[in-house]
Image (cartoon, rainbow, N blue to C red; front, side, top):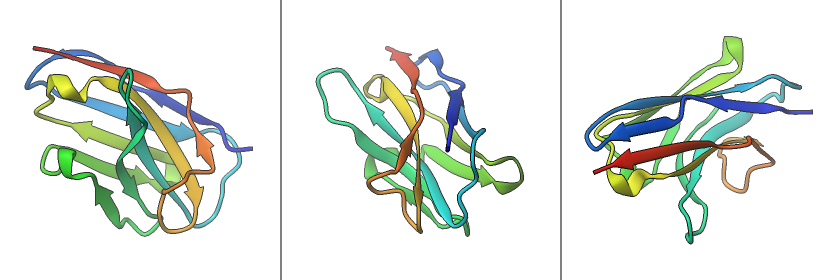
Length: 119
């Protein structure tokens, strides 16, 4: 069973930075993609970034140039470096995993970590 554990959320002022981490502490799925989604109050969950097993990345337009996703296969961890944060980035951030090349319609979710950006 996959078990995704996130950390690194918190509160930061606009323009600041945070780094989220997500580690799969459960069963390892070969050829899996990992990524991050977010959900703000009253809004639908949306994909933020994804990374394949081979390191191919995807970014939503609203984070391009500000966020960087990376992955360390040796410790089954994916990171999201978030720079130049804006109040509209405030949301619950969820780690996701899916078998395959992309992390659309994930098979597994983490419990979420809150990111709050104050103006």
